[in-house]
Image 1 (cartoon, rainbow, N blue to C red):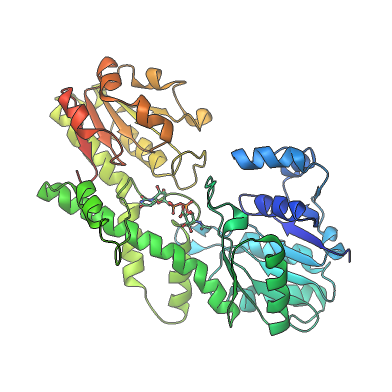
Image 2 (cartoon, rainbow, N blue to C red):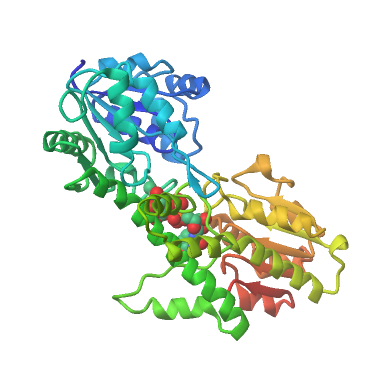
Length: 427
Ligand code: SAJ
């Protein structure tokens, strides 16, 4: 095994930044991915992910990440980090990609290697699913012949403040020696705190708990938005007021629903695991239902707004601005805006869609074109560049009659002062 060598299995949103970081820290890096295009681009020093930092780093790291499609690269490295997707199929965890990846590399596992799973899993996955596959494929014993553990990924796509090397990590291996080895590895690449836990299950639970925490709090304000709409209370103002409390409160914001591959899916891993252990997470499940119902709530607000304008649905044009699941990224996974477009089309509206980060999914090529002839616009994603562009004057000039602001992002007072109908989420 080459000294200071690592193989990153899966070069996606999690694996590619990790591979770059290891290369920057002087590791000999192998990158293993099933997708030949990703492998070719990485070897050419091109980021297959639209991300400013990655697009800057990859060219400088050309030749320092040896991307391959064959798993035999595993046998040459000291440390293996698995970063493959662990999606949820509707509401059930889907470990197939992880199982396939682990099975494909098991035959190349060597004594003394450290293997860590970074993919989000439910507590018990490493010991009950991953370990048997690795031991069967390698003939080695986890914890004795090789080190096995979990260090949940905490990438926040697009966040240039908390880049991967600045985010603390938690981890645990099956053996104390493995945990120490893993801690040594992450301390050599991460500039933030590395916390080792007493069990792999605890490390697996950390990630699903921190993301489920977000989902239930978003559901809280999404439900508040619906009740405050009935009570004519401006929730945005109430959240601003509550946020003045310097302790015991943490602001979350109502929106069109929860998108992304983390928050919208991780709770199902916790719910499913607890269920097999005999506990039904009614609260977590309800929070998921509330968030999943938000696109329909927003579509209902549009329908009501168009009615108020006295326009027949089939004669009304609605422009959905912003398709990505969160601001300033091009990621459409689980995006609520996409669901809103589908629901509005089903209601018979002519629907335009525009997102500067997602031209391939936009039906218009510019904001101006998207507003042309629009009776109502829906602000689906609060991209920074929309803030100054979607001014009340600009909306008025473009003949917009109504705004459904699914992010409470636009200037309500200014828009209403122009005689344009404004409806927010809980305001
Ligand atoms: N959202 C709301 N209201 C909120 C916060 C978020 O509606 O108050 C929506 C967002 O618009 C988005 C979805 O929820 O559609 C998820 O948003 P997010 O801010 O949680 O962003 P993600 O999905 O990129 O979550 C990632 C997570 N990182 C990992 O899983 C490694 C999460 O743990 C981070 O806390 C989060 O980024 C972050 O803080 O930005």
